[in-house]
Length: 167
Image (cartoon, one colour):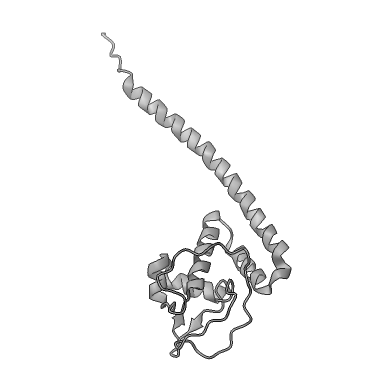
């Protein structure tokens, strides 16, 4: 994957097709520990499914729409994912949790591939998403307050004994 890949990698299992010059994301988060060390990080689609919880259909779709346009292939044409691909998928997962539209995620990936000249546009895209997340958090806090009030009402109602009339 070249979206966040700063260096080209080559393993014996990859096809000798030249990959486009990769973009470097200087703002990429520190990666989490990977299942395999760098240099031995060639994962099949089923392994990535197991690691990420995404479906194979989703991974293929991400590739088809340009969210992961440069997944390596084995000599038999099977997809081979790297640790950098896993990092990218983790970031995409965070973007999905924000509610960012897929079209905006694809646009972000395109901008990243275009390089440093797109820093400002990428930042604006992330700022807009951040504003949306803050609005959603405020809405969820309001919703939580309503739920807490209702719970307290029900808890209080159970503590008050029911009065039966003597009639």
